[in-house]
Length: 141
Length: 247
Image (cartoon, rainbow over all chains, first blue to last red; front, side):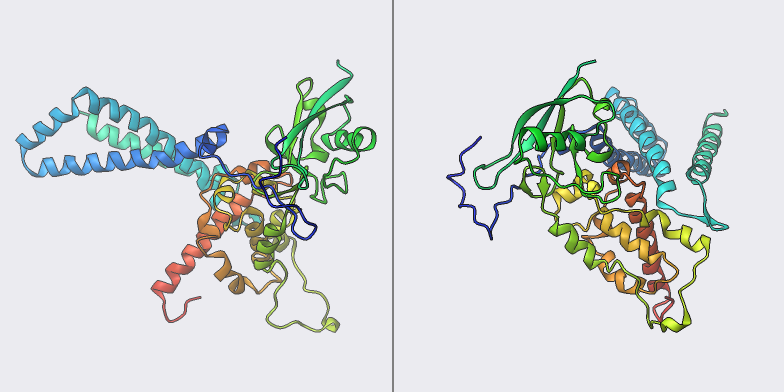
C-alpha cells in the first residue's frame, strides 16, 4: 500500500476518488477489443484495393504499354504479399460489416422485428452472387 | 471439490490509500453461492469494513455491478462455481472513479441519463378523466427491449469509448432515450434529438458492441445507438432534400 502523503488530505466534503487512466494498450487487453481494432483497421486495406483499382484504370487509359508496366508492378512479390494480406482484411471487413448491419437495422413486419439473418442473409447472398458473376466475367476465357 | 475458494478483492480507502490494492479472503465454497454471497460472508465474518453496493439479490436493482475476473458482471448473478477452483478477482466497475473499495461514483452517468429526458413527454397532457394513454401489444413491443435497462452501468464499464472519452453519453443513456423515442405515448423525440445527435452522443459510438455483450438484461444498447444513427442520418437527408420542412 502506498502512502497518501503526496496527495491532499481526505476530508468529508472532498472525498478523494481514485481515477485510473486507460492504458494506451487497452485494445490488447481483450480479444473483443482487438477484434474491433482489426475491424477498424481493415478499412485501410479496403482503401488500398480502391487506390490500386484507380491506378489500374489510369494505366489502362494510357495504353497497352503503360498497362503492361503496371502488370509488371503487380507481379512483384511485395505487391502480391500486400494484396494477399489486403484480401483477407477485406473479407474480414465484409463479413463483420454484414453481420453488424443486421443489428443496426430494426425492420418490423406486422409488429415483430425481422430476425437478424433475414437482413444479413440477403447481403451475404448478394455478395456471393456478384462476386461469382465478376469471377465468371473475368475468368471465362 | 475444495471446500473453500479464494477471493481477491480490490480495496481502496480514500483516507489512507493512494491507490487500490488487492486483499485475499478464503470463503466457503458452495455451489449455490454467487460472488455477492461471498462478499456478504466476508463482511459478516471476516472484515466488516469491506464496502460495496447491493440490494435486491435478484438482478433487478442494478446496484451490485462489479468486475469479476475483469469482466463486468452483476455479482448477484455470477456463481462462484463457474470460476472454481481458481481465485475470483473482484474489482469496482471500470471507467468510473472509485469512492471506496468496490463502490464507484455514478454521478456522471446520472447526469447524462437526465440530459436524455427519460420520461414521457407530451405536447399537451390530457386530463385524468379522459383515461390512460392506451397502447397495443405491437406498440409495446417496439420499445420493450430497451425498457428492460436496470441502470447497472455494466455497459459503461465495458465501453472503451467511454473510458477514453468521458464526455461520451454512453450506451445505457442513449438506449433509454431510444426507449422513450420509440414509445407510442411519447412526443418528445424532437426534444431529445439535439442531445442525441451530437458528436459526444451517438456519433461518438464506434460500435465496439461490448455493451450489448455484457448487458445482463439483453437490452442491446449498441443496436439502439446504431438504429438512432440511421434515424438521425435520414433526418439530415430529409432536411437537405426538403429544407422547407419535411420533418
